Image (cartoon, rainbow, N blue to C red; front, top):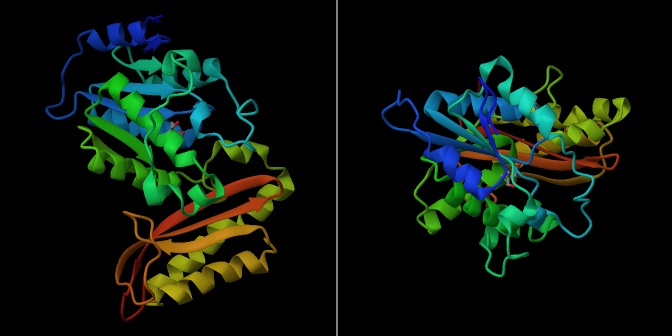
Length: 302
Ligand code: PAF
């Protein structure tokens, strides 16, 4: 289905192939096609990925697919928000996607025609730590669908948000380990005016929970300031945790400083880049957030 000025909406593999075969005016030398993968319920964070993709490629493919494989037993797949019409309106608004672009919104039967796949990608150690420890099998499910969507859309470049920093690290690792011919680009996360990182899950927060959730970005800022002042990893973590404790957030899953590439905890005397990541439950909603810090600065100052 195509609208006059908007992108092609492809619901099947055949429709996707036809849309990708359509000629596109090549304006850039390097990237002909970029993909942004989403599960829908789009917000400004997703739109910033699409906007970034627009700067890199002549054809942008946005996939909208709620992937059953990455939901655990206790996680409510049926409760996940779905609003294809709303998503399309956002994508076509402000001319974000044009006639050369494609929105691929398949059903589970299109993505998994033989039912649950027998063969899946394993995220290895990255799938067992932090988010992977709390959500067993989650990253295997993510990587399996990401690899399938890469095969189906055949992009030159794939963009992922830094908000899901562990997911980004896992995708990068899969691409490296399995020699997948695509360039992976990480795009900075987007925050609301009050500092909360944009997430589809924010919609579940009551006003009071949202106010309490602001302790997460506040805690990260405290960690950033400690790192900028030359604090060692342990002190950065303590500064971050203190803010969460003072705010009365007692359901904190983790506060960690990890290597950006493999998400292993950094040593206390680490110098160089690290990801300060945390996860906490506010009410019944589990939120994650992170920021990049540089450790081992001497002499203080930001
Ligand atoms: O980040 C997401 O929305 C999903 O994990 C992804 C990458 C679209 C795979 O289903």
